[in-house]
Amino acid sequence: MSKAHRTIAGLATALLAASLAACSGGGGSVATVNGQPISKASLDTKLEASPTARNLLQQLVYGKLIDQYATKHGIKVSSAEIAKREKQLKANFPAGSWSSMLKTRGLTEKDVRNALRQQIIIDKAVGTGITISNSQVAAYFSKNKAAFNKPAEVKARHILVANLATADKVEALLKQGKKFSALAKKYSIDPGSRDKGGELGYFTKNQMVAPFSKYAFSAPIGKISPPIHSPFGYHIIQVQARKPALTATLANTRSKIVTLLKQQQESPLIQPFIMGLVQKANIKINDPRFAGLFPTPAPSLPPASPAASAAPASAASAAPATAASPAPAAT
Image 1 (cartoon, one colour):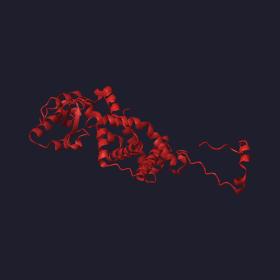
Image 2 (tube, helix red, strand yellow):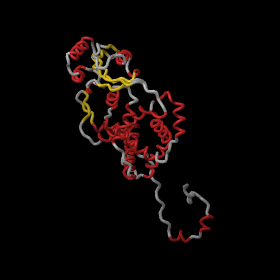
Image 3 (tube, helix red, strand yellow):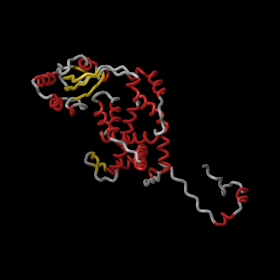
Image 4 (cartoon, one colour):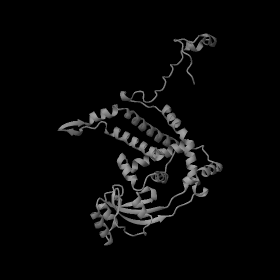
């Protein structure tokens, strides 16, 4: 699984955790079966008793601790920082698939940005002392140069329909001057682009099915295509712009390499950082079903009595460690 997909999986887990917390305490029913209701309370009970619920509660607690750490240490995350990270994340998904992927997982853009904000907080917390030298950047570029070459890209929009008759009709309406975005919202069956007026943004040749790419990478800009058949149906395509292929250089990839190398060095520090927050926190589990989820602090020792304080050190040191006289705890 790629880092991008692991990030999205984590977002889905966090959202499910929030949903689980939100639904507890609600009344009424979530479904009826031949007139017999299934109550929200019974669903909540099943959810909270499942092994997954323990992980979800952990994610909620970790999120709270990260937010509290940021507040305590004055760590700020700007909208521009989040937007930059989200743009990098979106680049790992085929054109037009981002919105549908979020919808399938029950996520919103707000969920994504909140999770990315917490990731940036962690980066700022554990990455303060990490520096990347010019020689490290140059060595990485030398070994991975091909990975930074950018293929040619096309920006286009399309209207996807199920049959040729509808495709012919849409093509005719477009050539009569009808608005592309309006027809996309009315006729397109592509859930990822329909509500955006058919907009797909920029994509590479390999991100689209072959018939679509063949047309998009050869057609004149602005021309309305005839119906293009693919396994998904019939596309009416309009190419809007193109970007030529870009050969990587050390200068135009330096910032990306620095980010990658920093992430590599930060990665083993993240889990200890989170566990450190947990160990210092006062976390009380009120539901017995989640008992033991977080370590409980060791009970404090009672204050020494005056008599014990006055006892000679030699006597204490001479006494063997027994069941009634435990050895000192490790520090």
